[in-house]
Image: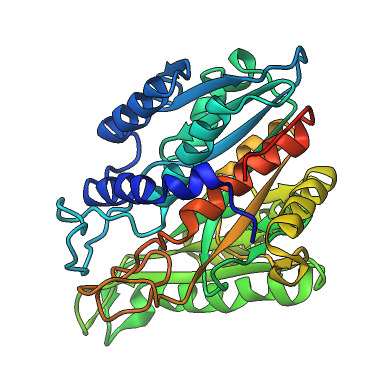
Length: 403
């Protein structure tokens, strides 16, 4: 493993930044303190800062010594989750109901380490934009930054993202070209019948039995309409109806999520869901309101950029520690919006299995979105070094690294 010596020397400082951010989590579009910390560090290191894209976004501009006009972007997310932390170590969340349970504190610290190195060693030909994005968790902060002019104000040829991955060994990386994360979409189906006494159901129209039949019918989309080689998930996660044992209710509500790796599969599923809902409810004399919300598109890596990332990883940690055909996840990521605009690649860095956690951690697993989670500070130097080497590989110039 070939970490950069200056970054190794900053390891304790980066860990202190990370733990400070962990102790002060902020939810989507509320990352005011976090943005102040990020902007303050960038300015301290002589990096020009632009603030306000996406509300609380921060972009730093690092120009190399070469005359070239090429540019790339490196992106980290900053927001926390609306959940309770059950860890009790010193840097645990000080804000009830808010927690860095996805490692965005670590992502921010890794990119800060890379920014500091690049600002002090500008042996590259072009410009590196370091993008600190708000609201990855449910807020679509990437799209907000794009809509506010991210790629207009900071034109770049490619953009790159990275996420820690629990269950993958510390010191390992994973990526793949093509889809790596799924689209995220929610649905709400409201079925309206006619309430009646449960002992005289013939006097009403039962939305509960209609919901039961509809729930079974919707699964045929996955088993009979979708190409089985194009992975997709349709999960009904809620059915709400009724309030008493002897009453057939007037209404039933069904909710859930759909995940796909292609837009074509998503289009098919939404269309078939709507058709089945309308016709099933009509056949059983119920009315239906079908609401389908598309949130994040699939995260689809570009082949050339994925190849560059994989090569940088192999040189950094060895081929045995790089899985360049990692199995994609049905989780979702709003970096997908950036990859829809320009080429790029999103990768995973192994967070280990939780052995790194200090005394006072919760008894639950060290998994994403879990109250016992904590980012592995041993990754800070590795992640920062990866960012630097990727920038130098893409903007190849003199690139004399001080190892």
